[in-house]
Length: 197
Length: 295
Image (cartoon, rainbow over all chains, first blue to last red):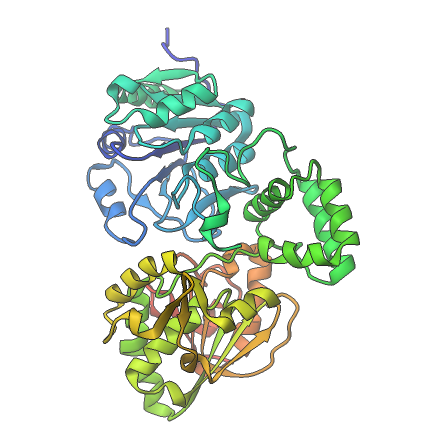
């Protein structure tokens, strides 16, 4: 009997993270099933002026290579995408990425809210949103949008977070489906992936 | 507009993403809006990228406290003055000087020296210059190379008020901090402070930098080819268009380049999906600089 209520209806997983999330996301990427079926879309707060290095750092231990999409690139199964520095990353109907240099939101560009909200709009109930450690409230509204559109929401357990402001903000704003530590998030993704075999 | 000052309070309920008070904007609404704008003013936003266009509309609804899209449409149709405020809100005018310093180093160290091999004077087009930060960056670069007077520059934007802002060259002093950081990473020969004066909390750029720049109100979507250039900068402009529109704008840019002229786009844009990609070669993939090799 599975500990999570998952099925194979899902089309994408989107993850937001900020201060203190690097360790968690690295662990998740390192323990991802090699045949992970869904696109994994990451929006992590990062230095605006440092274009290079982050993708490489994340790819180092990752099971799959991490890439930054180019504007209008199609979203493909089984790929891992990271929002590039100093751009907001949106999803478009028709399953492609759009980048933008609009105003910062929550002091951030990329802003997690933008990626999460547009992903919720595109994938509706077929989306899983995960919010990790962070020191501001970015991502909370995005998680609410995912929940409102019928998707699954997961936050990193505040006690497992280096800084718990971000998951807590999401928990205040919406009813999240799962509060999990990093290992449990990995278990969730493994369990999820089994649904596709 | 582009200045971050007026934009967000720290409440987390930023315009354009969030507040539940305002209805969710649907695709049908966006179509109605673009149709109204097209009918009344001729501007064509029908092929703008949906996600950001929708965000801009949502932002305007919140800024002007309009409860529904129909209110917005009525305002567009009946108030010309409102439309003039609407336009710069729809187009994104967030920019910085020397954005991607490594790009500017490449322009200074390779692209322009290459152009100079064959031409004593040459021409540059900033397509979508917004509030002018990029134009001033280029002028400073050229001045430091000692060739500012040898270059003809045209800077264009869809929006007149933004264009006059660019011409004025006055920026919020707070923004100069980031610009200065970028300039240092660009490794200019001076300090950015030498190119502006502080007046009433604004950074007023040295007007001699842009005395040869001609500013032009031009819409990339509707405008025709008006000149030929050796270098076109169109960075982070086409990201607001869908692929179809990107293709047609790119054809225009291609036609506006001399053979062997250069095209620079944003660091996360690409020509690879464009129909006429084969008429360019990649000069620098990291900085997204291309060279036209075929008419």
